[in-house]
Image 1: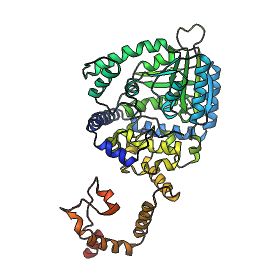
Image 2: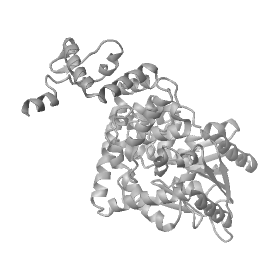
Image 3: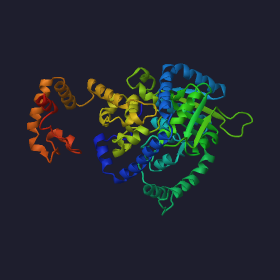
Image 4: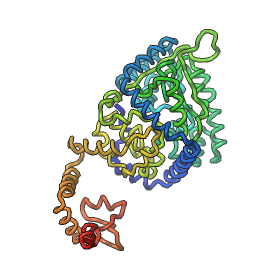
Length: 469
């Protein structure tokens, strides 16, 4: 289970985000750029659509035999000298990693970007036993200095402008007067982090994929920190959701061809690191110990559940970049580890439908996320299913349930629908201004507090059609 990052109501979090002009500036610049780069990358890659279909088929076939592929992965990791641990819950995953840290006498852990370690809230647990975690991905390093959580799956600090980062570095790193120059700020981060790699006893990473037939863990990054994290410390721990396993190297080639294009619009990420166990005799680099933590935390239950397709997710972040809701409120407003459209599904998977009773409605269902997804996950369909589940299990507030049940009843009976149109046309008159309904009374005012509504038409389509017949 993943605990919420913040406890204030969604409506309050969203309202605060909508008033944050720095957030809007940062989000608009970054997401617009990502959208354009993705469009260009797939436009120059005519076989991309076919590979998206192939990637989806691989994911589905893998889930059908997930137990067998995991057994093959475990056998091959152990064959090359690695250790594999299975964690049913986030608490168990933390305990496994903390035991490794204690046994090896670790005092500092360098970390490559990993949403799985964010999911299990690993940093706080490490600090509690005296191990200093240091995020080495630039975005993660920024938000660690700011004492925040990631607000995007691949761009953790997407919500910050370069001016805000300059102020943060000046204050936290005691370097007053820094210019808002990305090259200068990156150079400073590199200087600060380089010695941490040399001091660290423990390297912790996530995993984009794990190839069952070879026991290979694959990291896809754009910074050299991933390779330094896996090769310099004497112990390497990789934390991976069980759904990240794929059968073969041939399958890996399919995913690598579409992952970077979907995420950042690159043909291929700068670094694709393949890790196979600890350092062998005669090798000059690599850890003395390699540990792979396979994380369930609600995933396996969804293989036969309504959120099955969410297990296809490659964590590319493409659905966040195109989502009109995410682009307005950012990631922190979602309140949990995983933001955006896919984040709502993952939150429900990890915490149950009660955790998304509000988030399930934080979507326009426009379908942009499904169009952008490299494995064609039907996110809107699953969000509708979540809304149904929230209603049937009486998780939603009773006024909301009553209103929607009444609306469904009206839509199912043509006579009531026609009568409702006539009544609505009369009742709306005091509230229509310049062809729009800008404010409604009582709790209906929540709909018009941040949006205008179109009025009921003077003549409905059915009335027009009847007159033409």
